[in-house]
Amino acid sequence: MSQVTNLAYYYERARKVRGGRSVWVKDSNGESRKNVLLGGTILNPNKGFGHLWAAQLVQYTPGEGCLIFRSFEVAANAANNATSVKIKGDGFSDVPEVGQYLMIAPKSIDVNTIGSTSELTVSNSKVDLSDATFSETASTYTGVYAKVTAVAYDATNAQFTLTLENAFGTALTAGDILVESNAAVDLAEDSPTGSAPLLVPNPNTFIEADVDILPTEGYGLMTDSEGVSTANYSISTVHDKEAWIAKMQPLPGYVLAKNRSYIKGIFWI
Image 1 (cartoon, rainbow, N blue to C red):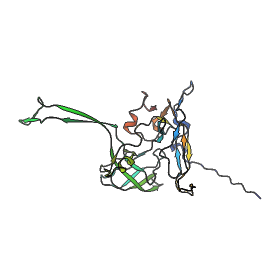
Image 2: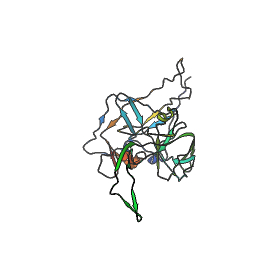
Image 3: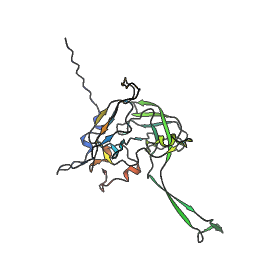
Image 4: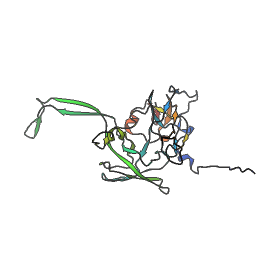
């Protein structure tokens, strides 16, 4: 005797879940998009069950691989010493995982510092700049990172509460955006500073269609004789396509600066 299991899964409020074909801007003349050559291995896959959304951003580097751009919108204000942070669980912010290193997303990844190479003269409460000389130093943004040690979901308020290993040292305001940090760069140093660059500084392509991702750690995942996981995801992404910003993940300032569209509400890369 054989048994058949029929499984159906429905969203009661699917209009609030991002992804799907409605995220793309439709053109009556037909859509155009460009594929990347060959694609690449996902370098920051989910540890557990995951999902990649249509129009989710990805940093593609030929010969190196793909970094999924994940972003999380802060749901409530938090003090600068807070190690508990609430983020939105509305289906637009990504789902956080224990073990991720997060940081506050900057408005720009280019930091220009102006310094004086001579002393300024102060007279009668006025600053004399006539003899002053200045220099400008350019650098790439780095920020304080914090490791996620616990995640709890509040279904009533559609929020995740993150427990962090340390505080960001800066107060958070509802609407701020957190992104993944390249903490490995700092942790590899003999004396880590607690500050690191962005993991995904240059999101440059899209995921074209929703796809579920199986775990890469745990859940009975088989390993080889050396105990090394054989889980590996390769993906091809697209670009030269337009998406509705309101239906995408939260986009911080440094990502919105890459938008090639001059039409309000549309993101084009």
